[in-house]
Image: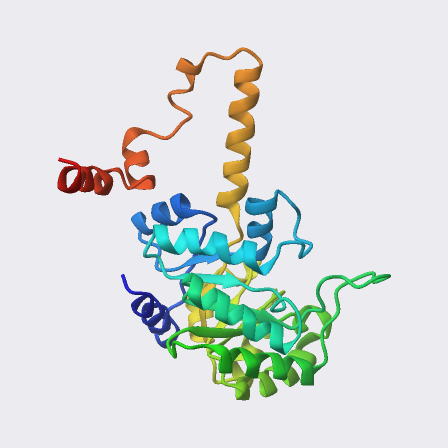
Length: 286
Protein backbone atom coordinates (compact mmCIF):
# COMPACT_ATOMS: atom_id res chain seq x y z
CA UNK A 1 0.00 0.00 0.00
CA UNK A 2 1.33 3.46 -0.88
CA UNK A 3 2.40 5.56 2.10
CA UNK A 4 -0.03 8.31 1.13
CA UNK A 5 -2.90 5.79 1.17
CA UNK A 6 -1.91 4.62 4.66
CA UNK A 7 -2.02 8.23 5.81
CA UNK A 8 -5.41 8.78 4.20
CA UNK A 9 -6.65 5.62 5.90
CA UNK A 10 -5.49 7.05 9.22
CA UNK A 11 -7.23 10.33 8.47
CA UNK A 12 -10.47 8.52 7.78
CA UNK A 13 -10.38 7.26 11.37
CA UNK A 14 -9.96 10.81 12.64
CA UNK A 15 -12.85 11.94 10.47
CA UNK A 16 -15.12 9.09 11.61
CA UNK A 17 -17.42 8.80 14.59
CA UNK A 18 -15.98 5.81 16.46
CA UNK A 19 -13.08 5.31 18.86
CA UNK A 20 -10.54 2.59 18.05
CA UNK A 21 -7.72 0.94 19.97
CA UNK A 22 -4.42 0.83 18.07
CA UNK A 23 -2.07 -2.13 18.21
CA UNK A 24 1.14 -1.46 20.10
CA UNK A 25 3.87 -2.80 17.78
CA UNK A 26 7.64 -2.78 17.88
CA UNK A 27 8.96 -4.56 14.77
CA UNK A 28 7.90 -5.87 11.38
CA UNK A 29 6.60 -9.17 12.77
CA UNK A 30 4.40 -7.59 15.44
CA UNK A 31 2.98 -5.14 12.88
CA UNK A 32 2.15 -7.97 10.48
CA UNK A 33 0.43 -9.94 13.21
CA UNK A 34 -1.58 -6.88 14.24
CA UNK A 35 -2.68 -6.32 10.65
CA UNK A 36 -3.71 -9.97 10.32
CA UNK A 37 -5.98 -9.52 13.35
CA UNK A 38 -7.74 -6.55 11.84
CA UNK A 39 -6.18 -3.67 13.76
CA UNK A 40 -6.71 -0.43 11.87
CA UNK A 41 -3.61 1.38 13.19
CA UNK A 42 -0.28 0.54 14.78
CA UNK A 43 1.39 2.56 17.53
CA UNK A 44 5.17 2.69 18.07
CA UNK A 45 5.89 4.48 21.34
CA UNK A 46 9.12 6.20 22.29
CA UNK A 47 9.44 4.02 25.38
CA UNK A 48 9.04 0.86 23.33
CA UNK A 49 11.51 2.13 20.74
CA UNK A 50 14.07 2.67 23.50
CA UNK A 51 13.41 -0.83 24.83
CA UNK A 52 13.51 -2.49 21.42
CA UNK A 53 16.54 -0.73 19.97
CA UNK A 54 18.69 -0.08 23.04
CA UNK A 55 17.29 -2.25 25.81
CA UNK A 56 17.05 1.02 27.77
CA UNK A 57 14.32 2.71 29.83
CA UNK A 58 12.28 5.66 28.57
CA UNK A 59 14.81 8.41 29.32
CA UNK A 60 15.14 9.90 25.80
CA UNK A 61 18.57 8.39 25.20
CA UNK A 62 17.46 7.01 21.82
CA UNK A 63 18.58 9.14 18.86
CA UNK A 64 16.34 10.30 16.03
CA UNK A 65 18.36 8.20 13.57
CA UNK A 66 17.90 5.03 15.63
CA UNK A 67 14.18 5.76 16.00
CA UNK A 68 13.73 6.39 12.27
CA UNK A 69 15.62 3.22 11.33
CA UNK A 70 13.34 1.01 13.41
CA UNK A 71 10.27 2.78 12.04
CA UNK A 72 11.50 2.13 8.52
CA UNK A 73 11.78 -1.59 9.28
CA UNK A 74 8.20 -1.63 10.57
CA UNK A 75 6.65 0.34 7.70
CA UNK A 76 8.58 -1.61 5.09
CA UNK A 77 7.43 -4.89 6.59
CA UNK A 78 3.73 -4.12 6.95
CA UNK A 79 1.00 -1.98 5.36
CA UNK A 80 -0.46 -1.17 8.79
CA UNK A 81 -0.73 2.65 9.13
CA UNK A 82 1.77 3.54 11.85
CA UNK A 83 1.57 6.37 14.36
CA UNK A 84 4.66 7.16 16.40
CA UNK A 85 5.55 9.04 19.55
CA UNK A 86 8.25 11.54 18.52
CA UNK A 87 8.65 12.82 22.08
CA UNK A 88 9.61 16.53 22.12
CA UNK A 89 10.82 16.45 18.53
CA UNK A 90 14.43 15.95 19.65
CA UNK A 91 15.10 19.60 20.41
CA UNK A 92 13.82 23.02 19.43
CA UNK A 93 11.51 23.96 16.55
CA UNK A 94 14.24 23.47 13.95
CA UNK A 95 14.97 20.01 15.36
CA UNK A 96 11.24 19.30 15.13
CA UNK A 97 11.34 20.10 11.43
CA UNK A 98 14.21 17.66 10.95
CA UNK A 99 12.29 15.06 12.97
CA UNK A 100 9.21 15.40 10.76
CA UNK A 101 11.34 15.10 7.62
CA UNK A 102 13.04 11.94 8.88
CA UNK A 103 9.90 10.25 10.15
CA UNK A 104 7.86 11.11 7.07
CA UNK A 105 10.59 9.58 4.92
CA UNK A 106 10.54 6.53 7.20
CA UNK A 107 6.90 5.94 6.33
CA UNK A 108 4.84 7.02 9.34
CA UNK A 109 1.17 7.84 8.93
CA UNK A 110 1.06 10.08 12.00
CA UNK A 111 3.41 11.48 14.62
CA UNK A 112 3.03 13.26 17.95
CA UNK A 113 5.08 16.17 19.30
CA UNK A 114 4.69 16.80 23.03
CA UNK A 115 5.01 19.80 25.31
CA UNK A 116 7.00 18.04 28.02
CA UNK A 117 10.46 19.31 28.96
CA UNK A 118 12.73 16.52 27.70
CA UNK A 119 15.19 15.12 28.47
CA UNK A 120 15.10 15.68 32.21
CA UNK A 121 17.29 18.73 32.98
CA UNK A 122 20.18 18.71 35.42
CA UNK A 123 18.88 18.89 38.95
CA UNK A 124 15.31 18.39 37.78
CA UNK A 125 13.03 16.39 39.99
CA UNK A 126 10.26 15.97 37.46
CA UNK A 127 9.30 16.72 33.88
CA UNK A 128 7.63 20.09 33.42
CA UNK A 129 5.93 21.71 30.43
CA UNK A 130 7.61 23.94 27.90
CA UNK A 131 6.22 27.50 27.61
CA UNK A 132 3.12 27.80 25.42
CA UNK A 133 4.90 30.06 22.94
CA UNK A 134 7.72 27.57 22.45
CA UNK A 135 5.27 24.74 21.89
CA UNK A 136 3.29 26.79 19.36
CA UNK A 137 6.52 27.33 17.44
CA UNK A 138 7.27 23.62 17.50
CA UNK A 139 3.84 22.65 16.23
CA UNK A 140 3.86 25.29 13.49
CA UNK A 141 7.30 24.07 12.46
CA UNK A 142 6.10 20.45 12.38
CA UNK A 143 3.18 21.34 10.11
CA UNK A 144 5.44 23.38 7.82
CA UNK A 145 8.00 20.58 7.54
CA UNK A 146 5.72 17.88 6.14
CA UNK A 147 5.94 17.23 2.41
CA UNK A 148 2.95 14.94 2.07
CA UNK A 149 -0.16 16.88 3.12
CA UNK A 150 -1.82 13.62 4.16
CA UNK A 151 0.76 13.08 6.92
CA UNK A 152 -0.98 13.55 10.28
CA UNK A 153 0.69 15.88 12.80
CA UNK A 154 -0.58 15.56 16.37
CA UNK A 155 0.06 17.91 19.28
CA UNK A 156 0.51 16.06 22.54
CA UNK A 157 0.05 17.73 25.90
CA UNK A 158 0.72 16.65 29.46
CA UNK A 159 -1.14 19.66 30.82
CA UNK A 160 -3.90 17.63 32.47
CA UNK A 161 -1.47 16.03 34.88
CA UNK A 162 0.77 19.11 35.22
CA UNK A 163 -1.78 21.91 35.52
CA UNK A 164 -5.24 20.39 35.47
CA UNK A 165 -8.19 21.20 33.24
CA UNK A 166 -7.60 24.95 33.22
CA UNK A 167 -4.03 24.65 31.93
CA UNK A 168 -5.05 22.05 29.37
CA UNK A 169 -7.90 24.22 28.11
CA UNK A 170 -5.57 27.18 27.71
CA UNK A 171 -3.08 25.15 25.71
CA UNK A 172 -5.60 23.39 23.48
CA UNK A 173 -7.19 26.69 22.47
CA UNK A 174 -3.81 27.86 21.20
CA UNK A 175 -2.46 24.56 19.84
CA UNK A 176 -5.48 23.95 17.61
CA UNK A 177 -4.69 27.07 15.58
CA UNK A 178 -1.20 25.89 14.57
CA UNK A 179 -2.47 23.63 11.77
CA UNK A 180 -2.17 20.33 13.63
CA UNK A 181 -4.67 17.57 12.87
CA UNK A 182 -5.43 16.18 16.34
CA UNK A 183 -4.59 16.48 20.03
CA UNK A 184 -3.16 13.69 22.18
CA UNK A 185 -4.13 13.96 25.85
CA UNK A 186 -1.55 12.40 28.15
CA UNK A 187 -2.71 11.66 31.66
CA UNK A 188 -6.48 11.91 31.20
CA UNK A 189 -8.11 9.89 33.97
CA UNK A 190 -11.65 11.24 34.46
CA UNK A 191 -14.69 11.68 32.24
CA UNK A 192 -15.01 15.35 33.11
CA UNK A 193 -11.51 15.95 31.75
CA UNK A 194 -12.37 14.41 28.40
CA UNK A 195 -15.66 16.31 28.24
CA UNK A 196 -13.91 19.59 28.99
CA UNK A 197 -11.28 19.02 26.31
CA UNK A 198 -13.93 18.11 23.75
CA UNK A 199 -15.79 21.34 24.48
CA UNK A 200 -12.71 23.48 24.00
CA UNK A 201 -11.37 22.11 20.71
CA UNK A 202 -12.77 21.21 17.31
CA UNK A 203 -9.95 18.72 16.74
CA UNK A 204 -10.13 14.93 17.17
CA UNK A 205 -8.74 13.69 20.49
CA UNK A 206 -6.50 10.78 21.42
CA UNK A 207 -5.88 9.26 24.81
CA UNK A 208 -2.87 7.50 26.29
CA UNK A 209 -3.24 4.39 28.41
CA UNK A 210 -6.42 5.35 30.24
CA UNK A 211 -7.83 3.87 33.48
CA UNK A 212 -11.03 1.77 33.61
CA UNK A 213 -13.08 4.95 34.12
CA UNK A 214 -12.32 5.82 30.49
CA UNK A 215 -12.80 2.37 29.00
CA UNK A 216 -16.23 3.05 27.50
CA UNK A 217 -15.57 3.62 23.81
CA UNK A 218 -19.13 4.83 23.22
CA UNK A 219 -18.57 7.64 25.72
CA UNK A 220 -15.15 8.41 24.24
CA UNK A 221 -16.46 8.51 20.67
CA UNK A 222 -19.29 10.85 21.69
CA UNK A 223 -16.67 13.20 23.15
CA UNK A 224 -14.41 13.42 20.15
CA UNK A 225 -11.92 10.67 21.03
CA UNK A 226 -10.97 8.73 17.92
CA UNK A 227 -7.99 6.74 19.18
CA UNK A 228 -7.38 5.42 22.70
CA UNK A 229 -4.21 3.55 23.57
CA UNK A 230 -4.29 0.44 25.77
CA UNK A 231 -0.68 0.41 26.86
CA UNK A 232 2.16 -1.60 25.37
CA UNK A 233 1.52 -5.12 26.61
CA UNK A 234 2.70 -6.94 23.44
CA UNK A 235 6.29 -5.80 23.98
CA UNK A 236 6.25 -6.74 27.66
CA UNK A 237 4.65 -10.09 26.87
CA UNK A 238 7.35 -10.76 24.28
CA UNK A 239 10.08 -9.91 26.78
CA UNK A 240 8.63 -12.32 29.33
CA UNK A 241 8.24 -15.09 26.76
CA UNK A 242 11.89 -14.78 25.71
CA UNK A 243 13.08 -14.77 29.31
CA UNK A 244 10.92 -17.72 30.32
CA UNK A 245 12.08 -19.77 27.33
CA UNK A 246 15.75 -19.04 27.91
CA UNK A 247 15.38 -19.84 31.62
CA UNK A 248 13.62 -23.11 30.84
CA UNK A 249 16.39 -24.20 28.46
CA UNK A 250 19.18 -23.04 30.75
CA UNK A 251 17.73 -25.10 33.57
CA UNK A 252 17.76 -28.25 31.46
CA UNK A 253 14.34 -28.20 29.85
CA UNK A 254 13.94 -30.19 26.65
CA UNK A 255 13.39 -28.13 23.46
CA UNK A 256 10.84 -30.71 22.31
CA UNK A 257 8.64 -29.85 25.29
CA UNK A 258 8.35 -26.20 24.17
CA UNK A 259 5.99 -27.08 21.34
CA UNK A 260 2.94 -25.52 22.98
CA UNK A 261 4.84 -22.39 24.05
CA UNK A 262 6.25 -21.27 20.72
CA UNK A 263 4.77 -19.90 17.52
CA UNK A 264 3.01 -22.39 15.29
CA UNK A 265 3.88 -22.82 11.64
CA UNK A 266 0.68 -20.98 10.79
CA UNK A 267 1.62 -18.00 12.94
CA UNK A 268 5.16 -17.92 11.57
CA UNK A 269 3.74 -17.91 8.06
CA UNK A 270 1.98 -14.65 8.94
CA UNK A 271 4.83 -13.12 10.93
CA UNK A 272 7.49 -13.94 8.31
CA UNK A 273 5.37 -13.50 5.16
CA UNK A 274 6.41 -16.99 4.16
CA UNK A 275 3.78 -17.37 1.44
CA UNK A 276 4.93 -14.17 -0.24
CA UNK A 277 8.53 -15.29 -0.19
CA UNK A 278 7.64 -18.73 -1.54
CA UNK A 279 5.78 -17.08 -4.39
CA UNK A 280 8.76 -14.88 -5.16
CA UNK A 281 11.06 -17.89 -5.13
CA UNK A 282 8.79 -19.57 -7.67
CA UNK A 283 8.57 -16.46 -9.83
CA UNK A 284 12.20 -15.41 -9.86
CA UNK A 285 14.45 -18.30 -8.79
CA UNK A 286 13.10 -21.04 -11.06
